[in-house]
Image 1 (spheres, rainbow, N blue to C red):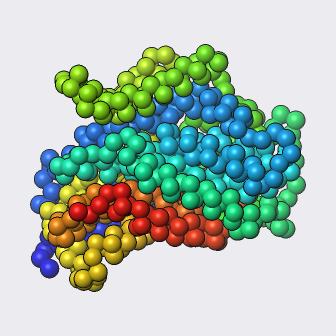
Image 2 (image 1 turned 45 degrees about the horizontal axis):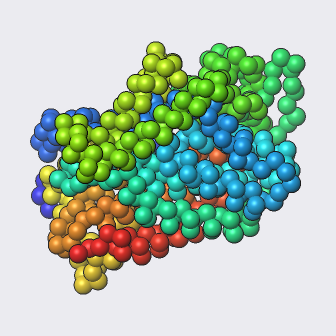
Image 3 (image 1 turned 45 degrees about the vertical axis):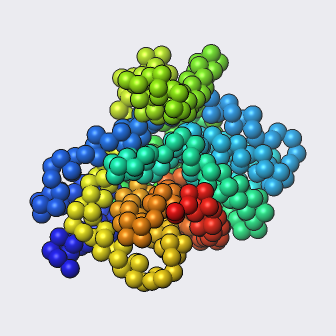
Length: 517
């Protein structure tokens, strides 16, 4: 093992430990690793910065704006209110109507705003219908993840792999190519949730001893907020972080891991994903509803239906044109008709975002607020880390080790091993970092076996998204954990079998759709 391999290996181990321990935001951790590789001469400045100009990464940024435009139009609120059954129904019948619709929506929009808008509406609807909200909120998160696997724009992970494929000299993914594996996985996942969620998910949990009656002032009402990664009081207690001075509201309750904590709450250190019940007036929601400090703010009202019917229709037409345009733009006839313009997803996402800004669908002066910069920096640095693994020879060394372990077992076993590695890393850290670490391994394994790398690339797309077993595996899981009052073990109980189902479908179907030969 030479110096460069050892250096990058130690840097990656340090990166994973730092991500698991949540020392700082993922973007800064990955950026630190790329700077270390730059200092060691493993990356050139050009290689380190290539990810920041990658078309896939910029497309993710543009899609943040498109998703925000759809969110602020109120279109999603209107859709979910029409999808939810209004007559007498059962959990299974309601799920059969709700889950496929949400999966379809998530195939074209960022998962987080879908869950942020739908979760409080579904919770309120379930209370009215006298059904346990806990039977719907984890399935809500899971189907947004499943739906995201189905298209190129369904999740940032797909765009990351798409960008890496192009950088490696391969043809990228088409708009609906992933649907050939994503749709069977989504159908299988929904069937599993329909039959098993009623038994595996808990009933609504009553507060056990610690909660106190919340006194409601005539001018104040309880509001639930989910703490985001940018919340400045992370790892601080309420005694150390004056919540009232910062936000003008009083914290009445902290919800975490299925527990409602009111006693000694001043001594509890706040974590990302904690749900706080605060007493606030309507000005708090308007002031902080669009802030990245909180992942979600729910006050029992529909807060996103500000735009008129014409604007909502206009937004949906724009979204439809973006999807159709990007799909038609991939056809050979279109490419021949417009040889000087690349009519891909980047082109149509850019046009859609600009039109939304000038049409005032979202406040153009605040457009930087709607982009998750940490995710973009994580993606950009992931390209650099992937390059460092190739340059140092670490990717080849790990690939050799994996091949030796599964000697003479063929590419199917290696495909399964790559899936498991990617999925474990996703559950521990972030999906984009998992894709970045796995991509050079996929490339090296396929090169050494002399097979087509496409099946390995597809496995990365699925495995890096399939974060079902833990609440920290995916941001949408964190959001529903607090609002649904779930325990960590609830995710393991329902999510682990789903992970196994997705794994089996993937390993069986992917080589059939994209052969090794």
